[in-house]
Length: 71
Image (tube, rainbow, N blue to C red; front, top):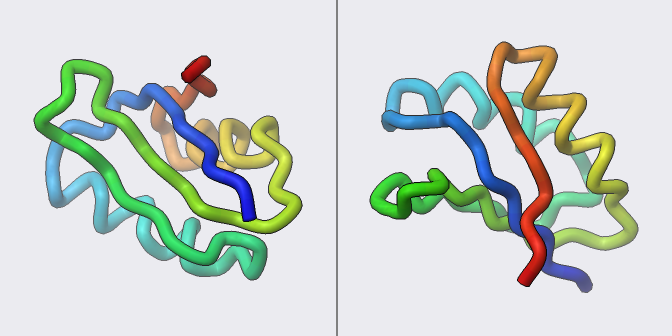
């Protein structure tokens, strides 16, 4: 299990609901959440063997910015 952390521009619960369908459709993702209070609107994902580029691409296709963060 690995933890991936991304900076996003998902700024509201309404926007989270748009992304929810995409994230829940990926079998490798076990859990995910957004911290909308953080200035970086952080997306945290627990997954097995998930490529960070895939997550970034997935959110980009939905119209959102998503960039992996170093931690």
